[in-house]
Length: 147
Image (tube, rainbow, N blue to C red; front, top):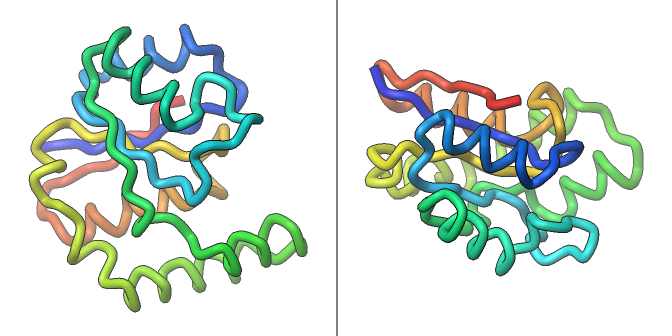
């Protein structure tokens, strides 16, 4: 049985974050954030994160925005106080429209991927939905949340 991992960087130091990735045997960090250049992201800004992943942990970095929520969906949930249930329905519909899981590069599944987003916990984060969606298309694939 193979596994895919998910992780959020909020409330983690760089040491905690990269120790988690190395300990899990992650080979590819898959950034599924809509905005990955934010000045608020600290060590997790796109260019810095790619460098840290490669240099500190020998991990490849890829950005896959096709697995991120749309700006409209993100804003409805985060900025306008929408419900998680509405976000989840909207995100699943968006993935169906984009054929998100079907078009995902299956070669990445063989490289111990870890899906990255911002949220500290997976319960209200689209990375959990992405993991569950991919696991639903691949027999024997399990999702491990790194916390």
